Length: 416
Image 1 (cartoon, rainbow, N blue to C red):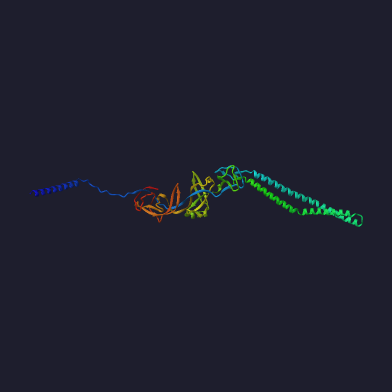
Image 2: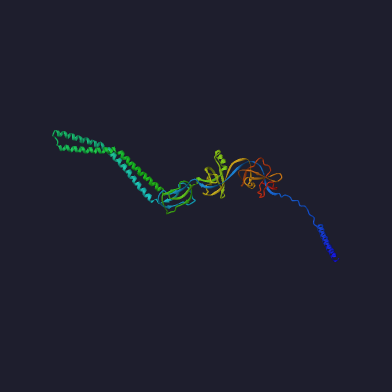
């Protein structure tokens, strides 16, 4: 009986615990807070957009030019001497004929004086020969007359000897006088006959001395080295007291009229540039450096491609832009012929190499491939010229979104 009552007591406790738990659960359910269903809305990203208006737009070709000179001259010494003066400095502008370097000229002045003396000797020899020739021409008739008289004297004495009226010694003396006169006449005639050949020889010697004198003068002139053209001094490589020899570089000079900007033109723009050259022959590039304008015109295109794949263009600087230093680099702009059916867009609107996003009527993005055809600088801003396929509708996204995908919901808050 005692075990039976214990079982009933355990069962009652179990039932009581279950009823208490159920009551507590019912109380919690009855007192729980009311729940509200939250509707999740898709986020619209704020962006900027622009209207698509294809039209005719000019192209701006942006290049990077480096200042150079087509005429760069290393000024060298033409003779051996000591430098006595260098009246120019690096970077100085010089006019044509400006004195650049002075060399010691004492040896060359002495050589010039010697050549002048030799020339005077040659001229005196010619005058002497001409004077001798004139004397021979004047004396020859008289000498021939004396020869005739001597011959007549010999003939006369011969007749007298045959008549035994003169001695043999007189005839021998007359014959000796005839022989001497005959030799004298022959010598004068030979001198007259060879006058022209002697004169040519003396004149050739005179020309030789004249050439030697001119060379000495030229050598003396070369002790004063002058600027061959108007330009600027790049670098001075000598100093007073230096002993130089022929071929020693004294300084470097470049002609300002030959200043150019070397810029690599991409191959995609070569056809347009050649067409412009053939049509009007003038292509102008403009830029700014150190706050000053720079202007140049295309002189010619290179004959070979560069390592970067383009072709080097030589732009000749206009006179007002020749203040540039060699080696300076600046950005150049070249206006190319306009294109039809293109749209200028900001660079922020481009995704990847050739993709943009249009915003449709439901404010969702739609990716479109474009053709890049050039660049345009407008109001100081760089824009990209593109051609869109077909007839695009809607607005163009001009904000660079890192999460831009097809179908993304956006909200236009600014119109460019």
